[in-house]
Amino acid sequence: MQKNAFRSLALLLLLLTLVVVAEIGLTHRNAYEATQAHERDRVQHDLADMRLTVSGYLEKLTRDAQLMSRSTVLGLYLSDPTPENTTHAEKALQTLSMLRGDYDQTRYIDQNGQEKIRVDRENGQSVLHRQGLQNKSDRGYVQTGLQLGAGQVLVSELDLNVEQGVIEEPHRPTLRAVAPVFLDGSRRGLMVLNIAADELLASLRVNLPAGSDLVMLNATGGWIPGGGALDWQFMLDPSARLSAQDPALWASIEGQHSGSFERLGECYHYEWFQTTGDGVQAPKWLLAQRRANEPCAAAAAEATQIAAKRIAITLLIALPLAVLWHQSRVKSRRFQQALQDQQAELSMIAQEAGHAMIMVDRQCHVLWMNREAERLLGWSEAELVGKNLHETIHLTPDGQPVHAGLCPTLNALETGERHGTDRDSMVGRNGQRWVFSTRVTPFGPAENRKAVVAFADVSTHVALQQELAVQAQTDVLTGALNRRSIVQNLQAALDDPTQTPCVLALDIDFFKKVNDTHGHQTGDQVLIHFCRTIETMLRKGDLLGRMGGEEFLVVANTLSLADAMGLAERIRAAIASTPCLCSPDTPIAITTSVGVAQPHVGETMEQLLERADEALYRAKHAGRNRVMMAGAAIA
Image (cartoon, helix red, strand yellow):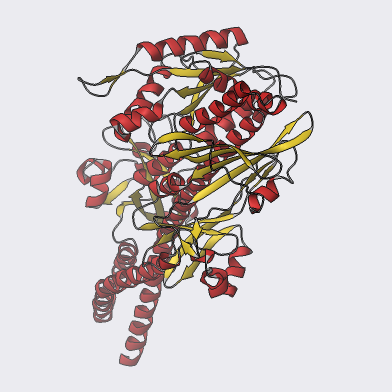
């Protein structure tokens, strides 16, 4: 008898241990997978922001190079290099240098590689050099640029200046955009823009989460930022490249467009980037973020430790209770059935420990509820006992259901099978709706079946997912649509035959001066004020998006070109007449230049935006604070 009792007790403890391990392991795995999914979404969001930042940066650089290579002023100079035409061409390059304060050099180089016009950015000023012009025919970017066709543009590798075998200090990362210049079908040289890339690297670091570092490598494995002492050393020592230090790892990275890898005990999440603009020849870079001092398996190891602790604590509580129950069963067979029922209920409680719990009978009437259930729903146990749970929490006062599909509690009572859902809407005592993760476990014979309803509040998680969806579409600072979202909406409007959208390309005049004079914090307030003012002028259905920096785009649906010009003029006037009250003592007056374009038949979105940008460019060169209509469609 004692041997049989010992065997049954051992079997009971073994089964209880397996149930506890399985239940807690499953629950914890689901929570871990949800957390990891959220982390993957965040990483993808961060990498997408980095990709958009680099794309916008290169788009500005290549667009300026192409526009200047096709400049009418430059064409007049090349066809008739009189002193007057030469001066006009020099001023055009000097104006571009002043407008784009991060261009280190703005140059026209002839087909022999000789610098003809050069404007350098020195101490915040755009300085024209007529002396000391050099022949650059031996430079790789000149040789490659002279092989480009009309409409093409070359983007150089991101590099530093090296003098006599030593990297120049302080580091000034540089990019070059090279666009060929043609006149009457004949190649006449190159337009070369050198841009300081410090701003690009700083922009990439801005939105990184806490504890993460920016990592960027070129296509050969050379460290740009993120390699510590190895940064930029690939320019002097080929062995300093990651491809040379760990060829197997580098081969794996090259074979995947995106992913993660571990190096020196730290986890890297990466994505390959290469701009895909028409006619653009650009290098490929690896954009990544590194979790400092954290291996890729850190989250899994931590989750395993937490699960093990929870299992141990649960077993410390459940196993002694099981032993006591078994001893009581052996002593008195008369209470065997009652003790079995209590053991079933006790097992349910042990499995769902830490959750809000309600027990219901066969008719879904509440038998009891724990304190966590009282806290979440707002009812006390005394108020809810005896009431139909489904009719109380799943129906509104007027009898309308608060969630789609079958009630998991009724379904479990009917079928005798365990049911659950991660999105169960319930009504609290105050009428407020909540979202819970629910698990319903039925037990007992069919005619007297009961069920334990365990649930946990996931409203915060649902709200967080909704917030992330909004953040993925909007600009964090201004609340306007971000570049990707406004471009997607414009493409959708162009694809819809029932819509005739017009676009307004807007740029805050002399915005850099605001930042330089008052600081970037005030500049941010000006950007917000600019958007709020425009939003008051838009109709329902019109969209405002931030293309980058101080550049914005309005998509006005079902407007004629004349009406769009009128809207642009009203916006221009409202901006000019409404200074930004950044502080009571410092009102800042701003103006805006606007380019307006309406799509032509067969025109792509890129061509439409290019015409709007061209009109904006003319508005700025005509004196700013004005509206210009785009010209004919681009062939």
